Length: 237
Ligand SMILES: Nc1ncnc2c1ncn2[C@@H]1O[C@H](COP(=O)(O)OP(=O)(O)OP(=O)(O)O)[C@@H](O)[C@H]1O
Ligand SMILES: [Mg+2]
Image (cartoon, rainbow, N blue to C red):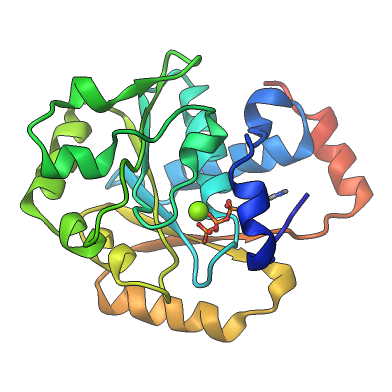
């Protein structure tokens, strides 16, 4: 169920989340996540989009859910994929993959631990994870560090696709900072929230940071039944 109410967040946030691309790969929703994957691949033929940020204007739009499912969809093509939880303020990726958040990105940046000690394997051999790690007092500072930039350069040598979950653009500067180090940014929006002004402001903020916005995901959109059947019956994966 889509739940965009902040006051209910603490209830669902700690519960394991269903990764539909994994649990129901033939569902119409999974097909939509694969469409997002395909659109990312085709968004820049001459300059492959290897490092992609998923973000939103406001909180709760569905960016963590989208990032996790799209990362799975990339891994299913047989390409080496890593999903990074760079929401160092409200991390949730560890819930989706039912793992712990004891170490992660924040640990990698502030300690001497190596990538091998931090990266987590998943049941899909092509998908690795970097959790957010302990919540630091200064997330923006960590994300704009030289160490963060070097980490992304190193990961680019080892992975075909790097998917990064981040905080909402209008809440904190973290995503605008990170957007300079990646190839593309995908904005996720909850269409039921009717937040065109917020979306416009987020777009302006990212554009000011020279981010390359490659697309917008319309989340929580009602699709008509015929369309669902169309996707269902054409699903070969
Ligand atoms: N397409 C969807 N269908 C059903 N539920 C969804 C969908 N997208 C998101 N949700 C649910 O909505 C809630 C918020 O989603 P999610 O945590 O992905 O948003 P977010 O943008 O990452 O939030 P935050 O700003 O707090 O990081 C979660 O309970 C998630 O399971
Ligand atoms: Mg999130």
